[in-house]
Image (cartoon, rainbow, N blue to C red; front, side, top):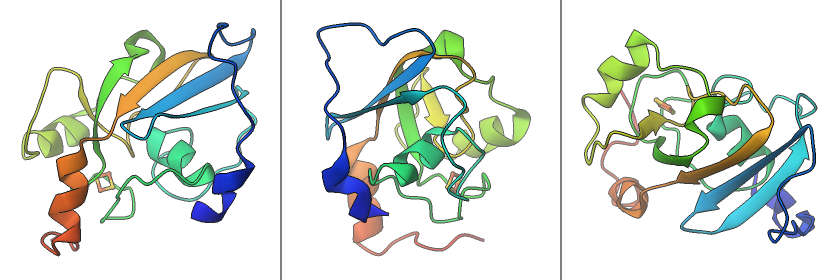
Length: 142
Ligand code: FES
């Protein structure tokens, strides 16, 4: 939902997030959002409090061809910071990630990787993933 876009409150990046807050930066857009843990409404995409859910809530583009049910890899992201505060990947996610191009040690599916604690998180959305979809290749899944 990109219409939230312009209403993003400024986040003061010179200070760590206040207690009980979640701060998420999405790269390469470099968009940072901050909200109180456990207060974000569920947007209906991916697991509640997944990176996809947060991206959708704040108008950050993260593709999700399968609707967020671990059945594609278009929400592939790299978790650059915050690994200690997120859910462990389940087998379904790991099996799916095996099929993802550009796999790295910090690869996660944005729809399955759930933030479980307040803190600072950085997710990089590989830009080639976007291009791949824009070219009209895997916009549907099996
Ligand atoms: Fe399809 Fe995450 S949106 S696996």
